Image (tube, one colour):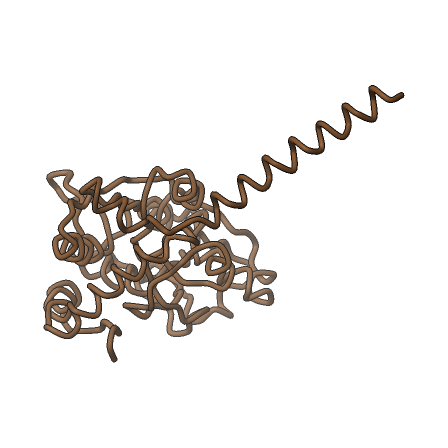
Length: 270
């Protein structure tokens, strides 16, 4: 009996010391910025099929609005920008395991995400809209009652749909896709009746592709895009925020935004 008690006390002591060590490590100094500077690289995680924020062009090179912003930020920080395509449905895991340093890809700021991540202030506004075929009879969300809607798995579109309980319950079904490109391809062949996606992405894709799609007049949710970091990487977040504000002040952000969207729709410093 005495041996069991002693063993139990010893085990408890080891667990307590291990926990305390873990607590000390997690609450230690924030070296997120100095680590990036020492390494000379900042690794950006993205969905590489999310135009115009980040996607592959005809030469298979990753380009996009967020890529141009991030490239300029990294240049001003004196580090190289490394683009790392990730499974968007596992983005938080990719970030927390250290495979990437930030998520910068039309990343919507939500209450749930802010509980586990550090975000910059918003740099672009967005909303969730429904895209349908041009010759479809659908004119509003109500017209989609009993129909099937597609969306990207793990996206803010899924969160917006969950928040619109009445609309979601009116649907026949919801189909999740790996990315918006696959979802719109399914829409084109009639697999789904509509696709729920970011308005910024929807309008750009319709304009660029020339395909017979249109956006319904009503939307599900207004959103803000931000850059996401690990919760404790405040120094790195603050440095990126500082550079974005400097870009807004000297006109660089307006130039980049106008080049992609035809006008300056950025919101930093406004």
